Amino acid sequence: MLQIESLSVAYGCIQAVKGIDIQVAQGELVCLIGCNGAGKTSTLKAIAGLLPFKAKQALFKHDVNLLNMPAHQRLRHGMALVPEGRGVFTRMTVLENLELGAYSRHTGKQASKADLANDLAYLLDTFPRLKERLNQTAGTLSGGEQQTLAIARALIGKPDMLLLDEPSMGLAPMMVEKIFEVIQQVHLQGMTILLVEQNAHIALQIANRAYVMDSGLIDYTGLASKLINDPRIRETYLGQAPA
Image (tube, rainbow, N blue to C red; front, side, top):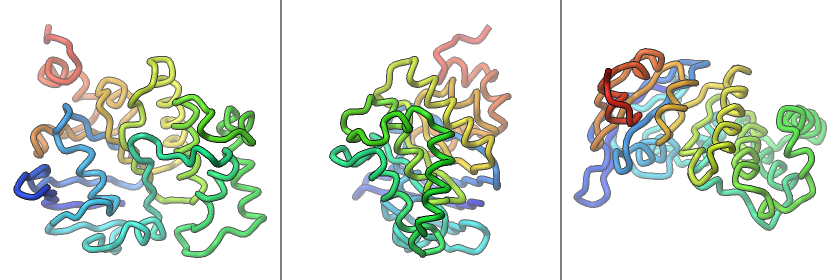
């Protein structure tokens, strides 16, 4: 689904990402973890087209070349971003936010009323809390509800791959658990996901594979189930001293 080779991102003379390789297979949930300033969000924004980057290769779905492709075109090819901070339209209702998400499918065509009705019904069944809040303005929702709305708004655009940037940021521990239940549910329904997350423990619990990033480089990569038990990862990123 995604194949990135030698990705680099710079802010002026500061090299934030220093030539990393990332691959995500169809149907995988891959997480990118690391400390603050490691380059995780810069990597995700580059993949989404929100930051200029250099790469030896950047392919989506085998033959879509991401080099120099504007962000809106990536959306039309089936790549959707749920940004850090959620980015919901606070003065619009939940329903209006979802309708905007459905406006341009990755086919490049506006959703028909029948398609929108069917997809909306499915999402509201999947996320019943949003159904209860359908006519509320998004700004009146809790942080966790806004994060669920941001995910649902991306999904209604019928993407092939979902990019999630720090979905747990600013949420209470109980809401973090609920949001990750939503992410896991979406993944189990077949969605390919690349997740950037500072909460390494919970990310590794639900991911298939993981990349561990530090100072713009990939330090470790492998199965999440193995990395979560790696003494080096436990001490550095999970706050647990090795036995």
